[in-house]
Image 1 (spheres, one colour):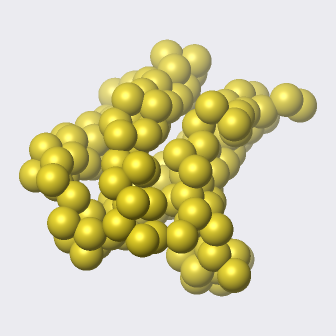
Image 2 (cartoon, one colour; image 1 turned 120 degrees about the horizontal axis):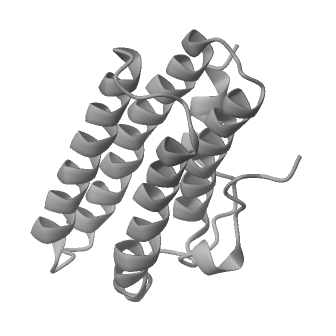
Length: 154
């Protein structure tokens, strides 16, 4: 089955660590879609949704640390966007958990747009600053956050 939300080169910001984290978020959205297609029990989708919320916090914290380390001039605005995005995904997850919204294509469209619009509309803006500040685009080792996160999966 093709992915609902395929990773494309357009989504890359050109920093391997951040791209790897974005790929994990895309993967979680695709896993929610698989739960929809397979008509999986609501509890399964809720578990993946919980994982998406938790990892969103981790990912945004990493970005915000990089912003502080490099004195990113738009830190306050980008952090405010992160806070809004966290609230949106939490509220959506909570509404899903309470049964107020279903696992359907409308929910999937929200999740895809929620992430895709932020990557393409906001995250692309900070990449040049981070690279100009000395952050390497490619690291000698693969994503440390991904390794840690994946070690918790059963």
